[in-house]
Amino acid sequence: MIEVQREVVTSADPRSAFDYLADFTTTEQWDAGSIRTIRVHGNGDIGTHYANSTKLAGRTRDVDYEVVALTLGASIELRGKNSALSARDVLTVAPHPNGSTVTYRAQFTFRGWLRYAEPILRRRMSHLADDSAAGLRRELARLQA
Image (cartoon, rainbow, N blue to C red; front, side, top):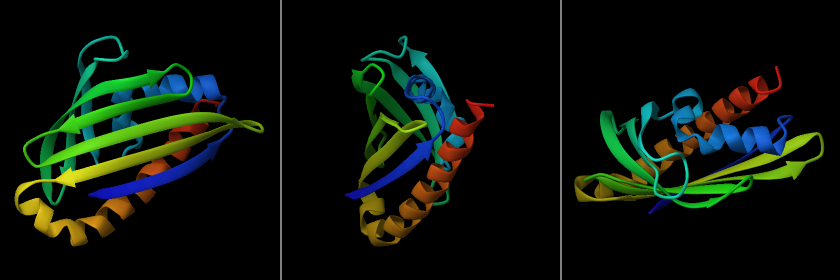
């Protein structure tokens, strides 16, 4: 299993930051691996499903995500899966002086041949997390513009 976590401090207020992140389709804007994310069904609450296309290991892969936990204004947890991986994404928002702190944590469990490439993928996932944190910082700053 690979786990990455990044923290972003933003001038966006906690409510605006949470509302933005709770709409998982915004991953297209900030997540370095996401190419496209659409809401398949649901209204964003627990049980909502998203179809995500992501670039990983040189291939575009479709991942089905479901919201499995939600604390309004504070955190959202999603589980994703396809034939090659299982993922768990947790986004939390907390008040911070003059804005908020966003913590993004992702866990990936690979199946098939990808599990043997995990040592190589670990470095790639770390770089993707860095790029995603930069994307989060950029997009959350726009909420104040």
